[in-house]
Image (cartoon, rainbow, N blue to C red; front, side, top):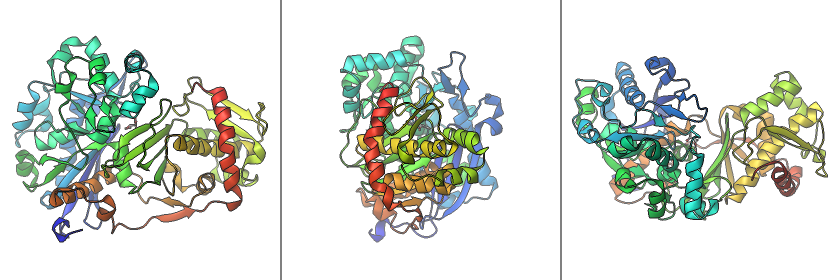
Length: 537
Ligand code: 5FX
């Protein structure tokens, strides 16, 4: 890195993450030390909006929305809290951010004027309450658009064709399908809409006081963008809604600077007037940066309510059945692929409760009492409908080594079976979208459990490293703020590995059992056949 692009020691970089449940700030120093954090919880800090988990679940059981004005007010509240803490905004060189993917913010003709005219003497939400043409923003949990997904796949030549074009088959939560539904059901609101932002680009808009462009990584979560050339696709747009291109505006690379902070924040909070705002992006692309996945083969597994696996790759293999391909937010020539398994921690905890009375130590002893491979017994545990592989009707399916159905497992077989089948399934589907981990990082709540880590490492046949912080999206936004700042100074794309060169190394938490590696590799085909026999994919 040239000295010109290096930040000075006094500088700070701010990452914001607007998740489903709240808004979080993470501030890092140029050495990547987290020096400050603050958060707002939508339900408890802004109870007037009446959200549960940050969202409104509608009576039809499929529509899920959030009020965009709540997101505006949360920014006011977060910055005010930082001010009360004595946070020195003048040291912030750049800001970037993360937003829950797929959600949309619908702005009417008054929005640009209101954003430009922000008055530091008044709260943001009092000035921006009438800029929305749709006051309930559909978010990623919404699954009301099956008809629109079918229409898109029919128009473009099927699920694989949509995936080949946009990186994912048509998904209910993807923004284009949400737009198609609103355009059909609320035509007046659609025609009053001047611009449609993503949650991420909307938050950047609040900071620059103008409409910020959508970045290509989050743009790929819309089923509207050609994920290879990073341009809106004319056929997808035409099928989705009339005159859509003008309402979406341009796309920019994720490292692009989209503006400087609006003067209202300079006057009210003491920001440096030259503080840069780097394009905001989706939470998963930000997590990729937050977990420092820098080269093909770097893969992260987040063990949470749902288990997510994502990584960087150069050859994209979009699938009409599963997974998503997005442009990589920190390496414009590369991609990221992502697999989501709905039955994650809650499924593990449910089996633990049944076989070990809720005690992890007992569960661990049960798993360890049987050899890797479970003597050929394999179980598939879908307590909830599953995304990968697609399972509509929940159920549990147990098999012996010949693939015959088995009524029940012993507690030890059950304990080992759930871990092995979950992790084998992650590996199988990752390989099917071209992700073959070389360096494996684990994060999320379950990443403190030794037997889970050991099994994960053995199933993938790789050493396993742990990220020290679990909120990788806001941390990734702060890292991207540094990266965008450096790219801007260099007038070029600075390799993210150079940006992160001085970041501390990860801690190794497990090594694979050498006796198990071949066994697990051979089990992948068996698992694939069993999954296909019980799923819809
Ligand atoms: C990704 O495709 C998702 O729908 C979720 O991970 C959301 O981004 C959560 F915010």
